[in-house]
Length: 447
Image (cartoon, rainbow, N blue to C red; front, side):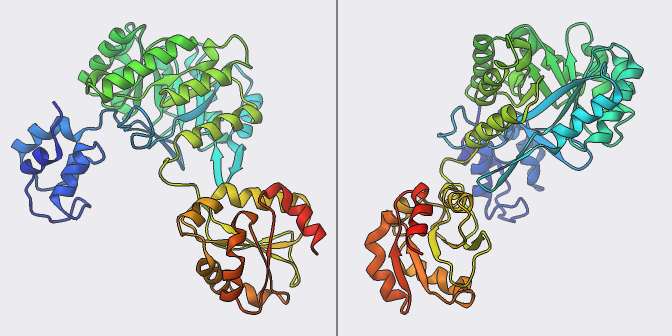
């Protein structure tokens, strides 16, 4: 049974040594109770207390790390069912599957395209997380060769998909020092694959046909000495994936059922009736509650939609996405170009900058620090006023870059015009439109 923060605190040394990274033992205890810290961070906890605290110190869903050459993917360690309860911490890893039956040049070309794909979304770089390589040929040598080709085209983490131990051993020989995910162990090969995963210090996915079978396999793998486990409960259709994914998450988080306290892997392409249906299944898996999603079809448009969805789901709802306050140049502005002012809420910033840039108009964009709030929200909260706008003007040095002191306020806060005129003597203060889409027309009419 999970312990409360105060119960955990009584079992800690209570020295407030700060070596765990928290200011007091009580603060550390509260983090343990919330499943946001590891007991191993305390160097002085007694063996007797360790035994009592073991259940309370472990997160309900184990954190699994896949490592490549220069990057890693972490999934799991979630502590809530719904993001509004707190937040989700580790975004679902999105991989694309390739097969060892493809010619080496075709394989390398496809992987390079996947590896190079990136999206700039409100200042955040989004990308796919890695490649899943399947031993479709059944030949261990071909599999090892394909893994070597893939590794030559990307440095991202890999998922290795095979059935027999020889294929995994051959492939792992090409990945020294890495920790891929091995997929997948079922009742026919679980002992052999668990031994390989333990030796390679790799994660192992277990493949069941329902909750009971996947839980049994997970316990068997853990008993064999493998701690990092990923679950595949077997469902591929919309209803089955949703039902089993939700049940696993609920049993792990609410009931602390350890046998299912691991991330889930999903293969939406296997349940889709067509490539066009795959993104819908993938989107459902990302939302509820896959830790790893393996796609069978890659196109930039489909990947973009899934990555943006994932970003929105895994953004802390209590912390707005924001950009760095400062002065931004749009279309190489000149000294007589107008200065537009806005807040550092990312969507606001990119809405304005994209409209002005797309219209080919030169302008200075002055972004004031409003703690990531939108214009109206910040104004209502007292975070976007004449003092903050004046401070932004003075700290960014915009006055040294222009010879026409013309400042355009967002139309939604026209009420600030008089106060800004008083705070910025010598500046011509104008009120622009309320909507970003109308800014280019306003600038053209008010040159």
